[in-house]
Length: 426
Image 1 (tube, rainbow, N blue to C red):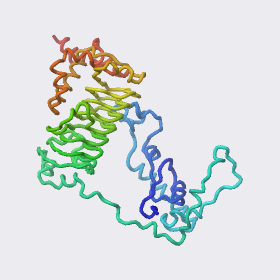
Image 2: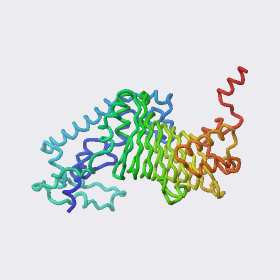
Image 3: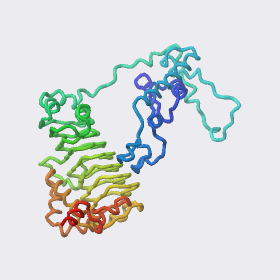
């Protein structure tokens, strides 16, 4: 009873036109390609994406490795042309003109005979091959218009003359905006317009958007330098996903009757794959905060399990409780955790090193971020830590992956280059 109300998308391991044809015969209407598309642009499946060491420059922020990337959009386009050509050839052999004509036509499938494979001998594929007869009744392929959630908030903002003029003329603008949880990926289209015109960092103006309400998923995704998103309320998963710069500030309403430090204000998987920018959240975060963070900075007041997972760069500060498995797969960047219950060491993945904040540069970095957090969010907890710094500093742990062991922030014996130069000149 649902088949005429849904679009069936097939994904996972599709590589050729034959795969597309088989998926269509089993009822698939859309076809997803993942890894093979990356291979078309140069990926060699080294399977070290999470380490920031991609040898062909596909999944890394290291400039020396990015210079090895030779892919161009035309390579991917050509691959899909070849897939389409194979589909066309196979359709011709079957006597059909369009892929749509064979969707759900399981009657064209035959089980191979005389093939005995131990691994698949117990599989029953009737659910894929014994489909209802669809040779004559094809009405289930005709769908009503796709349901819409209504106007897109970013489009409404981009229709504002003040904002568009600021983008066009490197100007500054501030807007107050109401937001609800069906407003998803807010800020991404604005960032896209800026990037299309100026690139990642060519915009010299400044856009400040003051939101009020509950933001949907991916609030502030792909944020750029010169963009400041301030949310009074709360946000769902993926805040700051892929952000490249600017600031995202999230804080509870001034009249909130709860303690923000003991409540979650953003969802799971925030700061996913960030390559820059700063996130300040006056409250806790869900699971996998900072996963694959590359260069983003953040201060939050609690976190769930798997914080800083696969992190390769940037700095994370957590001013409260955290879940288990901190730093799993972490190969770069630094993280600071306030441990008021002496329970943090048991929560850290054993592959990373933890230590107290033992260098002046590390203390300066930590204190500076907490100061910024207090200023941006008005966090009482951050201010309390600053007011009692000598008491709270010994309660912080610093997570140090091997690549950061010889940085001034982690090693007091390492002097920053600019300090070394100045002392030499003196």
